Amino acid sequence: MRRQRKKWRFWFDPAGIALIYWSVGLLWILLSDHLLMQAGVDPVTLTRWQMAKGLLFVTLSALLLYGLMQMGRRLLREQTERLKKSEANYRLLFEYNPRPM
Image (cartoon, rainbow, N blue to C red; front, side):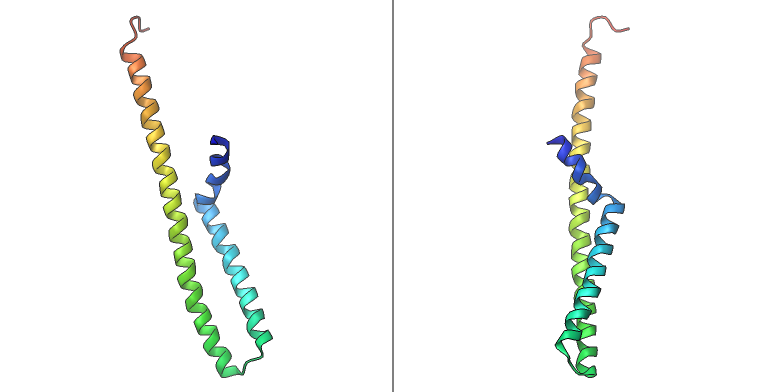
């Protein structure tokens, strides 16, 4: 389980979040433009769709970034708790050692 956490940890680091954002943005631009061109709409309607598409992209990407940062925050909190427990265990070992060096 610990190995799997390390594997997923990259995606919640700033570099991983930026890579996800870049990938989603690039796919959004390429695929949505292609779909609008395939629809064969007139230029006025195409402009409206482009604006709606941009607003939708900004909204969805903000939600994606928020979700990724929340997961990263949760991962950081779990790691901090594990570190505190480990530190407390070590402190007990040190304090109750009958022959400290």
